Image 1 (tube, helix red, strand yellow):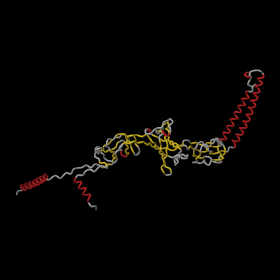
Image 2 (spheres, helix red, strand yellow; image 1 turned 180 degrees about the vertical axis):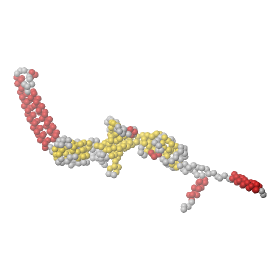
Image 3 (cartoon, one colour; image 1 turned 60 degrees about the vertical axis):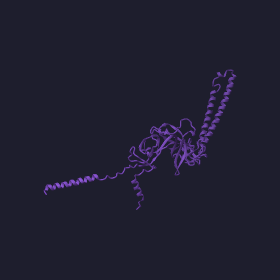
Image 4 (spheres, rainbow, N blue to C red; image 1 turned 30 degrees about the vertical axis):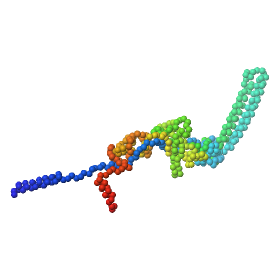
Length: 410
C-alpha cells in the first residue's frame, strides 16, 4: 500500500467517526424542561384604616412661679425675731409675720410726731380763735369784711397754723408707716425660696431679707413651632373660662417615678422669639404643691422642675396612621396592591411624629403598606404578604418536599 493511499484511508475513517458522532448528537432525546416558578418574597404588611385622631402636641419647659418677690427692708435696725416658717421651703399664708425688726427707734419717732401734732393743733386753735376775734372787731367798725386787709383778719397766721397742722399729721403718718414696716408680713400664700437674714443681724434700708414665691398656681413657658399651632386650639387674648382652654398634661420624674399633673394652656405670649422664631404658650397648673384642702395632686410639682407637656390638640377625622419606619423617603411608602404587586405610593402627610405619620390621601383600595425592608424593590414585582396561603408547588417539588419531611433526622 502506497503512502498516499494510507493517508486517504485514515482521513476517511476520521470523517466517518465525526459524522457518526454528529448523527448521534442530533438524534439524542431532549432533556425534560422544568417550569421556572419565580418565588415572590414574603413581606410583613399592614392594612391601613381611616380613623378619628386627636393630635397631641409635645413640648418642654421649666416650672416657674407666677409671682416671685424679693423681700427688702424699708427700715434699718436689728432683726428681732424670725418666724419658724421662714426657712427655705417653708410654707406661709398671706398676712403671716415672717420677720420683725427692732421697733424702738420708730416707736420713739411716732411719739415725737404725736407731740408735734398736739402742738400744731393747739397753735391752730389759737390762731383760729384770734382770727374770729379779729373778724368781730372789724364788724364793729361797720365796714364790709370784703374790704378788710388780710392782716387785720389774721388770715395769713391762720393759714400758717393750718399748714403746720397738716405737716404734723403727715409726719405722724410717716412715722407710723415706718413703725409698721418693722414687721415683715407675707404678701400672699407662698413659700420661701431664699433666706438672707436671721435673728440678730443688722439690716439697713434696701437690704434683701429673702426671696418668696406664690404657690396658688405655677406656670410653664412652652415653645411651639408655627406648624404646632395648626394642631391646637390657640388661646385668644380675650378672657376665657378654664373649661374652654386646651388641656395639658405635664409629666416629670418624682421620687424615681414618672408622675403626671393636669394643667391648662392659659395664654399665648404676644411676641415671637427673634432668634428661634418660635411662639411661646404658657400652661398654668393650680396648687402645684398640693397644699390646699381640695388639692387634686398628691405629689408636688416643684418650681424649677423640667417637665414634658402634652397639649391636647384638634381632633381630625378620616386620617390614616402609618408607622414611621415604613417610609422610604419623606413621603413615599411601598405597598402591596390588591394584586400583590409592589407599588410605590406618594402620600399626602398631615403630621409626622416620632413613631407614626398621619396621612390624608395617597393610598388606593386594597393597598397594604409594607413594613419589611426590601433591598432592591422593583415596580410591579410580585409579593407575598404574611397570612396569604402558600403558593401551589409543581408535582415533583411537592414530592421532593414530602420526601424531605419523612427523612429521619441524623
